[in-house]
Length: 305
Image (tube, rainbow, N blue to C red; front, side, top):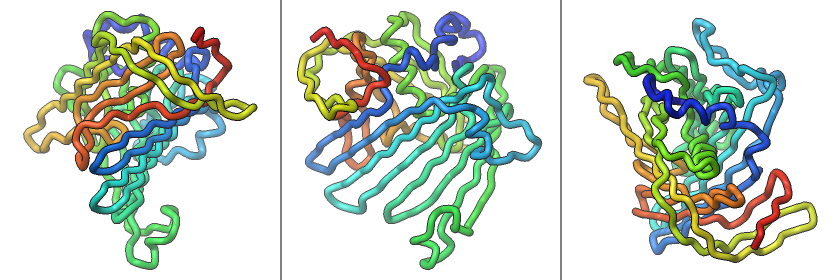
């Protein structure tokens, strides 16, 4: 599951990583408030047949794209709205397709809306990532859909070959699922993950870093409406430490996850499997805590509260 060669101690957790039966939620809403502004993030996941999403994938030169290994794939959609006290609002939307059998990233589409607009499509291959970047060419195209944007640039970002090849490449959004899994199985050894961010491959160490008492207050959504939940838990703290292998020809990029930069923590309720808080640094705000505001479950749970 994105392990560097030699990290076989973590292989035992791989088969259950994206088993739909282990994912208790389908939609999560987080919010952070600061005197410098607000950040709202919505995360949704769906299980889709591999055949139905295949037409959404872009073609890559050489026909070496990573393919789904089974009949279904996991599709994620993450929307982050950043509203600074000073400056322009920004909306970042990311859709990703992930192989359920291996956790490998298949394709990722990022869309930025605000003062600057762009769309970036990443198709993962066995040797690197093929990217198509689209922007509006002029004022007439600014209000058009990305499909109509004509300022297009293609690029290929090869994976480094330094003797530490990765068995699987992840995309950043799937780290939310990694945290959920690690909290549920009480993983004692750090995982060494390989994650492609914007232009570079990052090594990300994920480890269980103790527990923290948190007060939860959120809405549980279901077919009958909304139910308020409020209680205290001892949440598992999963810490992520990204590093970028140095390349003489490149300046290392800063790792980004849900708008957070660099190292970050995800706190998970071990009973429900819910990620209840995400803590890290946002460039315009400093340290922020994205706290769970609403959840829609994949199936009805007994909270035991």
